[in-house]
Length: 103
Image 1 (spheres, helix red, strand yellow):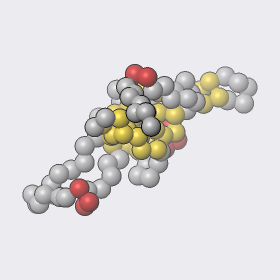
Image 2 (tube, one colour; image 1 turned 120 degrees about the vertical axis):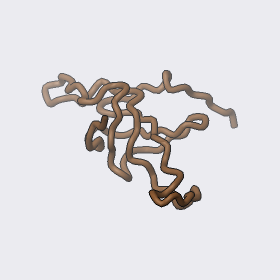
Image 3 (tube, helix red, strand yellow; image 1 turned 90 degrees about the vertical axis):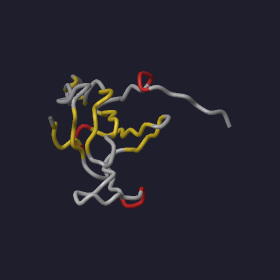
Image 4 (cartoon, helix red, strand yellow; image 1 turned 30 degrees about the vertical axis):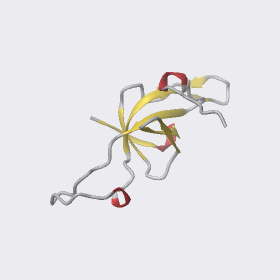
């Protein structure tokens, strides 16, 4: 089977989909205990890398997404599709699964 090499610039989400680069999970607890990979929780914060054109309304016009490239967002824990490109992890999810923009 042939290997496929993708870069983030070649990924263009459709509709109201958002492509997010997942932030690194915590390596230590607040008390300083190092966590193994199996004990780490899935992060819920990431940076928006690509944004789709938006959801279509009933009259056929597009509703522009509320987030833009570069925004740090908080998203639902089990939302979207996990994608790994190289060593980076991404999530492709619907705009409705984004809970907040964080600073």
